[in-house]
Image (cartoon, rainbow, N blue to C red; front, side, top):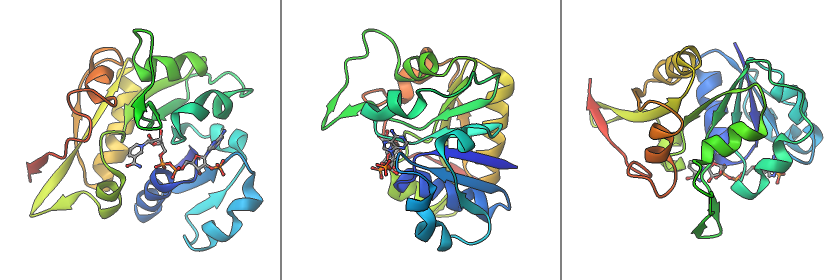
Length: 196
Ligand SMILES: NC(=O)c1ccc[n+]([C@@H]2O[C@H](COP(=O)([O-])OP(=O)(O)OC[C@H]3O[C@@H](n4cnc5c(N)ncnc54)[C@H](OP(=O)(O)O)[C@@H]3O)[C@@H](O)[C@H]2O)c1
């Protein structure tokens, strides 16, 4: 499986590392183009490559891991998503403040910028150090949450994350689950462990 990643910072790199450790392939991308990522991907080994945002977005599953104020720019000009899965790992921070979402959830806003994408909110609740350090702690599995409006897309994302070793908890729709997951929500930054 090939997974595109829009963004190539800490969250994107941690995700790429989990993907390649599981034997799948990741394409990292950023606003500056694949050449700017050549040295970075060399350190990852064969499972991780650099591409343009468009190339990353062509994968059947794509993760969005850019700063909140860059989501419009990152998703602008891409072709219709035609049902491909968009994993929204963003948090709506503007500096230290939370963006005013005008009554929508952050992932509903992301979904509005990616017509035809099946959006699943995931990975945003885990502080990146915890995501980097992995799913196992003190003999238990770290919990990670997913929310989305398409059951099949959620099942695919859930299967990827449980393949990494995380205990996946489905919180429901982008509206209900997304609200609990997003920055400022009840589960933001929460680090739960599930006995294996
Ligand atoms: N850090 C955490 O603990 C954490 C945990 C969970 C979720 N999150 C969320 O995940 C997202 C990424 O966080 P991060 O910590 O990985 O940030 P980061 O290390 O600052 O990386 C951001 C990445 O986005 C890229 N980017 C910026 N503008 C872009 C554009 N227009 N198109 C494509 N790529 C663009 C940047 O590359 P260029 O500038 O070179 O384009 C960079 O590779 C944020 O929304 C954050 O709130 C963060």
